[in-house]
Length: 115
Length: 115
View 1 (cartoon, rainbow over the protein chains, first blue to last red):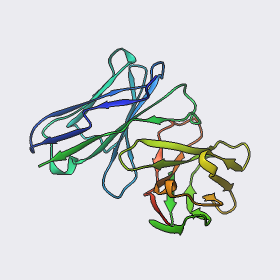
View 2 (cartoon, chains in turn yellow, purple):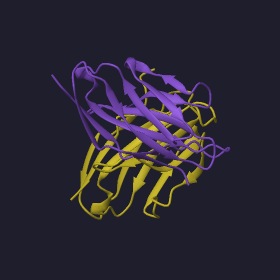
View 3 (cartoon, rainbow over the protein chains, first blue to last red):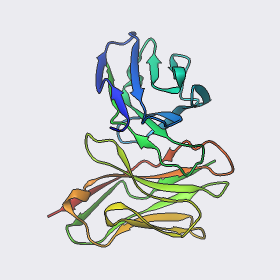
């Protein structure tokens, strides 16, 4: 197992364009999380899935953002009509089980720059 | 509401001297607390976690943290800093009480280790 992977690692786009990021969790992990990290801040929770069900969404996740996890495996995060304020590192994490004690394993992130 | 406050944004120590990174938390329930480390261009890595067992928690790379409920603190320590410890450290809380295990991060402490 190679850990959580994210693609692409970097994305530069122009304001108003749509972007999509992919996260492949550790196999057999049933929970998958998306976080956003801006410069000088800690990551902030966006949303999470248990298997294919999206169970919670943060208020940070505006209607321009949508996340999916078809078949409970990989996940995609799409941002429509990007704005400069969307520039950030988007982190994906996965964990096994449903306990709050379970470690979340993070991917390397996708750095988004909106020009 | 749950939150963590990291009291120092930057800490600088000399190699071989002790490390102290301070964290205070706020939680309505019995929380789970974590310390994560983020090296440049690498994913977040779990250092250690507190889950209502022993109040002194030992982690990887010689780090440990003590949960003090009376002081609502969870400070991270290491007896002797190594150059490879230079990184950003995040104190993290996840709410208890059966809530989702989304992670709530502090703003981070950047640790510099001088030769």
